[in-house]
Image (cartoon, rainbow, N blue to C red; front, side, top):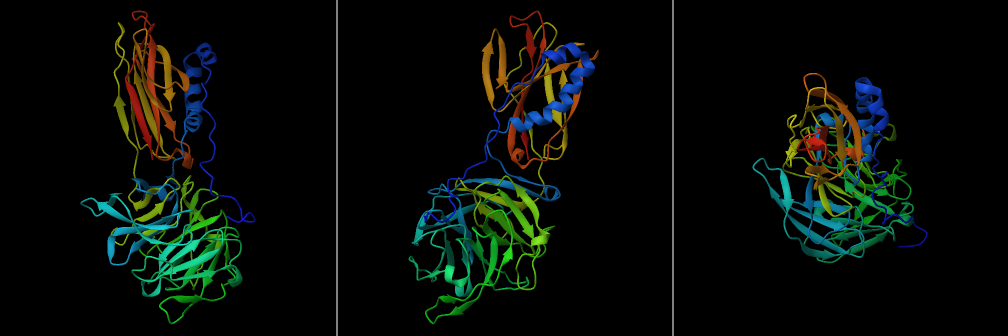
Length: 437
């Protein structure tokens, strides 16, 4: 990579604050009202502290219609890059990952509804000089690929295992270095036009193409370009008819980790003032492609995993795990209800001794540690006071912050109460695994 270009390829998930245990002794002194207040206001912040890995999430208002699904690792691939469906072969996806020089064919698996569920072993079908987030079939099924660093555009004829043409984009007006490329699909304004995005200058350019007599195409001077933001990588046009985002251009912002939607003008260029973030915390995502069977939009992520943006809102799940620790005062329980999705509110319910005094503990991962007969089922990253009423019950409304880093993440809960009959002095519930969408 040329030293003059921005060094971005080792950029990983943005750092997270380490989880910390919240103070509980002051809440114990305040009594039931203070305890409830502490839980209500500290738990949403605690959820953010417990996010230790990068996750991606569809943001409001799009989350009521779409979900982002992780379809698993692509064999032989460990980085982001370009994606393209082979024309007429909807069960084969081509990928090329930065900085690899191979184009791989990825056989896809589907369920009974036609949705892609994963991938099988890949094979190398072609080699190119370099790669990035652009991989797209153009006129006459010529395959176009972007090359980050030298700022080039490669072309491969149908069936070719090597590059048939390479052009330098700098003299054509594409500044810095290219990110992704795509073609405007039929049915949208500007159908058939070639678009290239400059990662360095955050511009999407219209690139004219002229047949060169050899089956490939000579690119002309790039249009002035629409000025966007975020470090442009993948470019995907959404077919007409898709809810909320139909007919728009999705732009993967490699620098910010967002996937944003733009309305387009008469030649298919994005209109900068119309930007709306659809997916957040998609750090390291590359190019995308539309599934010709379902309309799902696939992206190759920074770790070489396939992400699918698909129609159908989803809530997370609540799953009990582990064994409870009973006491003479009974066996505590914990459960939750509602839609576990960012921006939503769930109800966390606990039961235990009448007027019981105890703790609600949250962890970023599950455990199975035994201390004086007490089974601890989560990592104790944070604890808050939990005081029950005369009926031995408590219910807490827990808002899930609108923070994309919480999407597809998990938090583990457990509650315990003072019980002098046990060796540890506590009885405890089983664990509760909460998946947040």
